[in-house]
Image 1 (cartoon, rainbow, N blue to C red):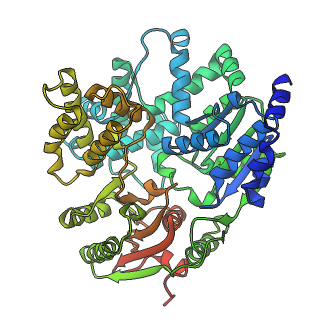
Image 2: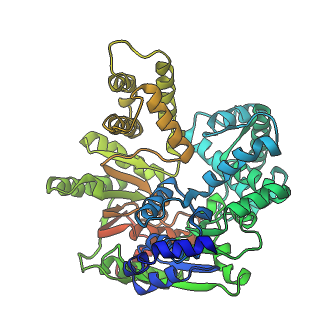
Image 3: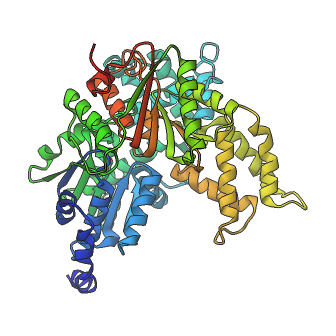
Length: 560
């Protein structure tokens, strides 16, 4: 009580200031300082502002000890943004992390006392292990490890199985229940999955999914560890709760125990990661698990114009997906829909429009090209290279898993052992990068060079050497925090979630591409919703031959 009283005395002047910055719905979130609380927040409704101000207000009135708060997000970028906002609200000591980073920190801390022996290596890319697993399974003649898309699909299937807590013997049965079947035969996946786990064990290595599984098991089985962690963290805020996987929920249960000081934030209309094991069931059943929970809805939209919001709401109504939005921004131009004969013509038309925008003074970082698949973006990427348009690809594939990035960083590590004489580290890095800037996929290397220039101008960055640069990059690998540049963004709809741009070009809105054939229709509709709600001022949608049914559902294309 002494802490609460001291805090109240220190921060009483902050209370009005914290609440004054909020609209009535956001203020209701901030005032709900004790859990359980469930916030249903539509796209662009200021959910991050609401939950950070809730934490700050609870600290100001003495309800929460900031040192015992754990705020969980899904990306390192979102966690960083939350920390920045909390610092601005005079709450610098709150732990804002991704679920993976929180679990990893606890696992590594308790590893010597619980598991003993050497701390395992963290597998940041599965490619090498999967290649060996394919060889051990005797499948190298039928499955090409050099096929990046195939390897990405295999990795995704194993990740789905692990976060869904599906063991190899049950894998085939579980796959048979899914509407979308994998590109690799289920029996082959079981063989690869089994070999992959065996190789990791042999090499004393763990992957990101193991971090969650081992941390959850440790907390469940080790009473002393569980009590220490539960004493450390007593108040929980969980963002993007609609995308929680079964293993993540199991871990959250272990952290929370029998307590009820939990605030979850989610949007049923943005549930788009079922392929990765995410499920909205935990958000949808929150009030069943906590009947006393306070449910608050954020419906005031601050991101998009009324014209874009109108289309989003129409789609919500058709799909019965959740919270409709009330746009607060000024009116803008109506979203445009353009038809093309083929994909090449579509990309040429879109890039001509973008070139005109750049010539008129639009900053490239204000523009995004979004698509359903990476293959569609590849077509755009090729033409952008020819036109010398600045771009960066943002994909669901981890940036640091990309082959060209891994190969380049390998060369940098070699060079860092014996630095070149008479040459600054930036110049040496540029020299190392030259062979990687001649192919098609150059944006990753360009981003790493941009990061180097930023670090070189940062007075706090020391030592200014290749080794110092590598330490920064390795920290980013651990946090899955890739470097970015002020350029046009190319992103899949999955990778675009949580982001926003002034002007969005959504390409490939064709029947058979969006929705993808054989994919769950409801989830594809949610993907389209995510895509159109990334745009703040201008939304341009294009298709080839036959339009997506979602264009009519959203009112963007008149019914025939």
